[in-house]
Image 1 (cartoon, rainbow over the protein chains, first blue to last red):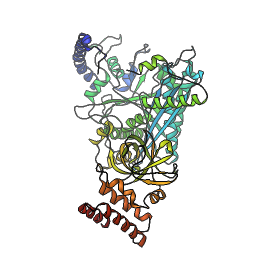
Image 2 (image 1 turned 90 degrees about the horizontal axis):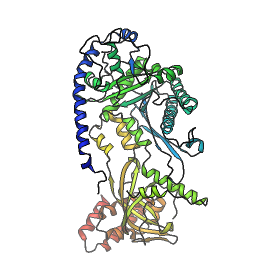
Image 3 (image 1 turned 120 degrees about the vertical axis):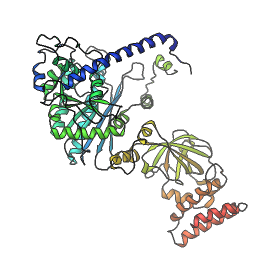
Image 4 (image 1 turned 135 degrees about the vertical axis):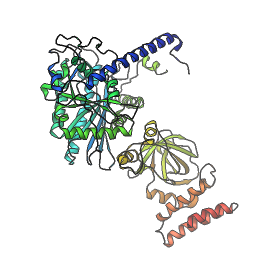
Amino acid sequence: MQFMLRLERLKSAIEALSQQTQATSQQAEIELQYALHWLKTAPPAATLRERLPQAIQPGQEIAIPPLDMPLENRLNSETVPPRGTVIIGVDGSQIPPDRHAIALYYVLQAGALVFRYNGQAPTPQQHAELHFSEQELYDEEGLLITGQLGMRRAIAEMALATALAEQVRAEGAPTPILTLTDGPLLWPYSGRSREERESLLPAYFAAFDRLREVGGMPVGFIERPGGKPLLELLWQSRLDENGQPRHEDERHPEAVDDELLMAHFLAPGERSVWLKRLSPMNEKHHEPAGHPIWFCYLNLGEQDLPVIARIEAPQWAAEQEGWSTALHAVLLHQANILHGNPYVLARAHELALVTHQDKTALESLLHRRLLGHGIITRTSEKARQKGFF
Amino acid sequence: MNDNPSSIPIGNVLRADIRSFVVASRIPEPEVPTFGTFVRAPIQQGKSQLIGLVYDIRLQDDPFLRDLAATVVEGDPNYEEVIRDQREVRAVPVEISVVAIAYGDESGYHYGLPPQPPMILHRIHVCTLAEVRAITTQPDFLRPLLENRDVPADELITRALLRAAPLHGSAGTTDYQDYLLTAGRYLARRLGREPLRLETILQRLQG
């Protein structure tokens, strides 16, 4: 096989990347010791809330402890998942619209696994949609949609989660019915587009409303979360009234992030206290809708092999201690099966996945149907030739 | 000879030659056909049906399954639902090998090799009991197996006869005994020069 990427030409860049990673890692190690100290000596939650800056700068991410629990608390789960508990893993995938395909369309597919802790085989579910109308394919500026597809997929996933939660609730499943999606629960887009404001966000929050009614607990799972909202909170705790560090030797952490901090703080199976991210999305959209998002960190790994995930849930679910306890136990069990990745999410991904072969089969069927209507279609010459490689 | 709605589809033809073919399937464990199952595949643009017997079943693994296999413990309640999911729900990749024994068209069943193998991606179905009864009325369906050295023919003959006999008479009845007796005589004629092989098959039939 001929390699198309001329690796020899990238050698110096690869070396530079390695050196940069090494330098960042060394700096992170130094900052980590400070951060661990800040965490273990953090002021009480109420004090931390009082010390927050009045205005959050755009792009700034900072967490607050919404409950009066010390930040240094590490919570363990002594229990196994309660018998009868249901967790529904949901994921989605898509075929994006392609100008070079035989027709302009897009496909969304949501897949789910309903996992009941009752000794029975789980139930797989799939829901696929084919969209092809002009209004669905072009945005308000007349451009072919790109980013909107991810948003619409999130809505499709949440709709499937809600429908399944309703179903298992009707079967008599106990609360909470956990619905686990892969990715943030806090709407990860700007919220500024007309489609988001008028259609997507209302649908998203309607799903939350319905889940709340049926005793569901929507949960977002983010492995390798990145970001440092907790570190920013800790840094704020180190500043005086003028916003200057109280200790001269302390600097704002640049290389360390929350994940690294938690990997050295949480033992396997432990989770942090609940935190709430102060972000424009949480404040301007989730809060007024009645669904502010809280999060915690959870170590789903083993000794010396930490796997840190950020777990997100709406406040009304997270603040119920019994629900948090059940979630903790279920996630530990699920992640233990697949070395840190929840089993239901892995299966949901498999069920949702639209493969290249699926796309080929769909286009073949479409081609035949169009031919039946006397319409001869073909992919663009560019797409055809790309298929050679 | 057309598709019978009551028969079970098991997968699509992956590769084939005139004597045998392989079916790729992703079906839950309870639906995987057993060794010696009679199946049929459309040939000649669906004008005929090739009849074959399942002689090998290979369960494929995949990276997901490999990852799980190192973790789960059968009998441990912690993994009960996961194991059932993998066995009963998740589509296990299976390759099913089938040996051709006959083909059927409007004029009836013809024993021996078919005029052509099934084409790629044709759907394969398990034969209905009525079809199995019709195919096995004469013991001639055993001939292609006796001549085929690439399959576990003796085991397959035994299994096919024990599967067919109850369709010609309930176990213990004269019809049942007569059916096996006729098949035994047929085998005795065909295997006259291989007495040890004949004896093994007959012992298995009695056993």
